[in-house]
Amino acid sequence: DGGITQSPKYLFRKEGQNVTLSCEQNLNHDAMYWYRQDPGQGLRLIYYSQIVNDFQKGDIAEGYSVSREKKESFPLTVTSAQKNPTAFYLCASSHMGAGGNYGYTFGSGTRLTVV
Amino acid sequence: GEDVEQSLFLSVREGDSSVINCTYTDSSSTYLYWYKQEPGAGLQLLTYIFSNMDMKQDQRLTVLLNKKDKHLSLRIADTQTGDSAIYFCAEGGYQKVTFGTGTKLQVIP
Image 1 (cartoon, each protein chain N blue to C red):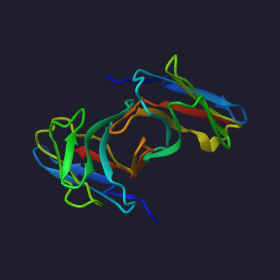
Image 2 (cartoon, rainbow over the protein chains, first blue to last red):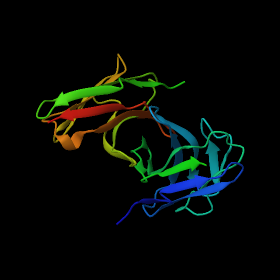
Image 3 (tube, chains in turn red, cyan):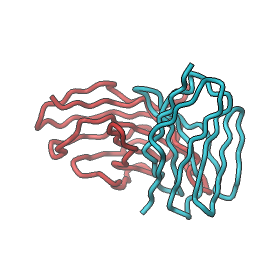
Image 4 (spheres, rainbow over the protein chains, first blue to last red):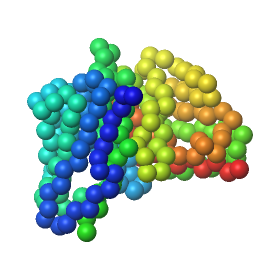
């Protein structure tokens, strides 16, 4: 079955530590995205990529980094520079048609907690 | 910039219709979307409407778009307890999609 897989489901980070969240898709989608979700808030865009080896900052990129070495994979690193990293992180992918974006497929999320 | 607003909470009785409303600001949006999120899970795309359409129906779901007022609504007919979730409205063009803060739908048996 095609889909998008995020791992791990739960992640605990010590202060000052970098951690990497995995996101893999087998939908052959060109575009991939990382969002952060905080309680009672909508989704905020961290980074997105529309093609391999290229990515753009979203609205809240500070303290995060990404890579897109393969079409299927878009890992997110939460660095020690991110001062408030506790949140639910969602990865998504989409097919980009001539008319626009036909909607995202989301992973099941990674809940990151700073301990 | 883009902004999408929704009311935070809606409570309905099982079997009634639910109507979730949304307003957006970007008139250049090509598509408007509705997503559903169950507790602890990712978002699931329910439906989308192209900006030149007024209405789209898909089984129990009806989407209405008033482009002049930049107002989008999602009607769920015969609401069931399994419809309890957070519903997100979103608008987008080619590159980015902007999400609302979500409406929590509570279905009372």
